[in-house]
Length: 231
Image 1 (cartoon, rainbow, N blue to C red):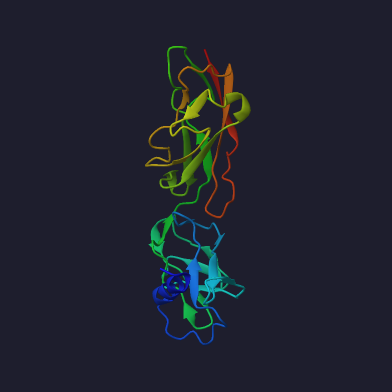
Image 2 (spheres, rainbow, N blue to C red; image 1 turned 120 degrees about the vertical axis):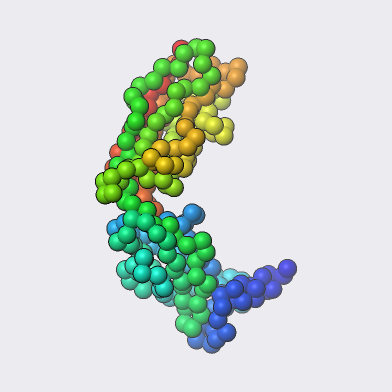
């Protein structure tokens, strides 16, 4: 498909036959978080790209709306929030008379991330006979309603990557891992730090855990460290 044809296809998806008032904009490309989520009383800013007939970005004033009472557009420029702790909601962008499709998938609404808590001791020993550490337990929790938050993520990072490079790794083979939380607010599967076969890890390795709300605001408790001693 040519670039021009691709843009025309995107216009068809936009679902609007009148673009005369959109000042050269023929399509709107939604640039939403993946997966799209919003937390109670957290405010994130929606993004979209206006496209001209050549497929290039256009500087245009983009407005936003939602047909769903579960979401609140704080202002027309795309500040999104909600007063609920569960449910779903969709958003739609507009330039002039041109509308995007409703967002698909819809935004998932979840309780506010109030705390990132370590659920195991922050100092762990990895015996010489073990290929991996015990689970690096961390839990993302809300105060109201009280409990763990599923469908969010916790970031695990080896702090001294130069010393640890090639000797330890998370599942997946890297020194950084973003783990999705399950029921109870803990990652599933559990996160462990593993030895690389044939390599000698440093005597100690530190792993930092952190989390952010969909708006990018750090969750309280972010930055805590696990210290792992390898025997």
